[in-house]
Image 1 (tube, one colour):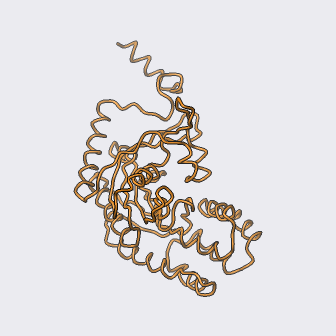
Image 2 (tube, helix red, strand yellow):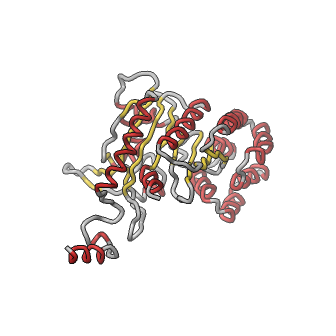
Image 3 (spheres, one colour):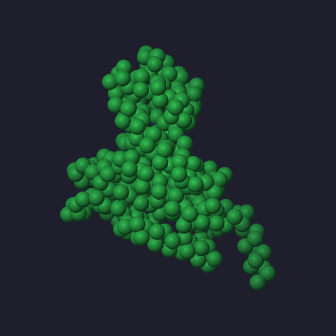
Length: 341
């Protein structure tokens, strides 16, 4: 027995690919499995009590389903294989996409739907000793509407779920709105490629690169300045007057989005365990997200605990039927990590 233990201890420092499990995939022992079961039991009960219906997304899907709707950076992380008929398939990189696609297939179902799911996403993170390739998520989607009131409900559920899961510290919720950015760049007549390039630069907050890009593409000084202000403006009052000014001057409809943002920020102030801040440079996948987006961070964990947003065009792309939609997902692996501290 001592020899076996010594062998296992020595192997801990060896790349797991030469052992028995590929890097980034994790075996759960008895105690970890019990902990996960307790967490998932709480998740199931939580959503069931709030009227969500459970669905189960498949582990694999056609690779083309993901390639059409994820960003170039995410596309590079898709693992690919082929089934016996030669069709390219991949483990899920986006459960929301699969859930919406699945619901769109049930064309007989009408009206609004509140659904939840648990499942794994698999991404290649390009590290030799990958920490996580396989990530367990629990998510909720609302198919049928995605206005400010819907997002207030999602924030309420995120707040309540975090307390249910025993998370004692505040979650920092970073709120953005891709519609603000889209309206501004559309007034400039940007191509799809330019829109996506600038959105990636704003998201990364690379000020030097952003200035160089804007200097080469934008002649309107006020538009250039507001785009630069989006990088570091974390309170609406810092940029509200500028946004309203360019909205009036260039006949945009930013007033509506600003009002909705103020409504959500005001509503969120009563949550004791959420700290909501604004970041209009939080721009993700413009062909996917259409309005509010958010990331939620907990303590010193660098990866988001919670992600979510509005994707009003996704259901229509799969079904031909126009339906607004939004939702959020919580990273169960991070919840487990927090509970182990």
